[in-house]
Amino acid sequence: MERKNKLYWYCQTIGWGVYIFMSLFFLGVVKKSDYKDVILYLTFYPLGIFCTHIYRGVIIRYHFLRRKIYTQMIYIVFCSLVLAIVFVVTSYVIAFLIKHQDEFKMIEFVANVLNVTMVFVIWNIFYFVFHYFQNYKRTEINNYRLLALSKETELNNLKAQLNPHFMFNSLNSIRALIDEEPPKAKKAITQLSNILRNTLLMSKNKEITIKDELHLVKDYLELEQIRYEERLTSVFSIDENCEGFLVPPLIIQAQVENAIKHGISQIPAGGKIEIEVFKDAKCLHLQISNTGQLINAAPETGFGFKNSEQRLQILYGQEAGIQIKQADVSVVQVTIQIPLNAPEKLVL
Image (tube, rainbow, N blue to C red; front, side):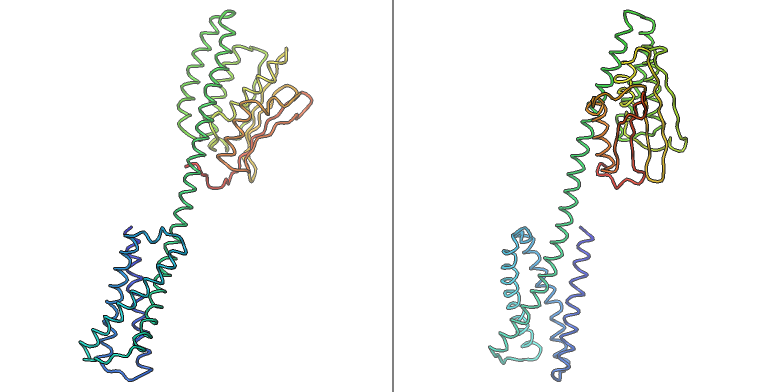
């Protein structure tokens, strides 16, 4: 607000200064003038500033800037005419006091009113156009803020859905062990406690480092290893230069869950899960491969896959994505792609 007021006064002093300077210049060119004429025109400087400043107060008080465009145009013409009449009448009074000039010509008076009306119209145009663009910019910023809030709400909803889903799957794994192997079930509960503690800490952030995400994935695989034993093996191939990159929480872990549910658990002999992280010039790539066959679109319509896809789109835009394919006869591969130079995020 202070900056806006300073700009207003700068424009007032400079604008009216230019007008008075030009008036004095043309006065000297058109006719011979004495010092009284110069004094008279110099009094127009504070008079113009005073009139427009009072008029600005009227604009603010009666909310002219909130009116429709055609209504504003009517106000501008009418108020400019009223201001011009006040200005010219006042100038005649000042001329009488300074020069003792009491001669009055209606044609000259009307011409002066029309000329000064144009000056006030120009003042109005600058004032209204400036506020129009300022309000447009403010509206645009508010729209972006609303969009950011809606995206943030959507993202938080997705995260809120994911954590109970993860917990449900983990509890199912432990339930299978309770009757068969109670000691392993007890160990699994301890591991689940550690995983949930880390998950709650992660849920406070929209993004975490790959290193932290992989730590959670390893804990989860250890928990599943108790259930599947030798039927489940895992391999990690991680580019150390990528460990500091930020990704959405549980983005890899959700695909590991899918790999176990739709792949490993369906094969009597079990299989392998391989997790690779690497980057190229444009994107960060997260690949989760598992033993199995892509018989139908179940993984693509599954909760973990759809959730990951939505979160990637919210955070990184259209360039981010997730794809699933049959990489080999017995290997299904999910690839998550995150642009290294993502556009400025709406979620702040």
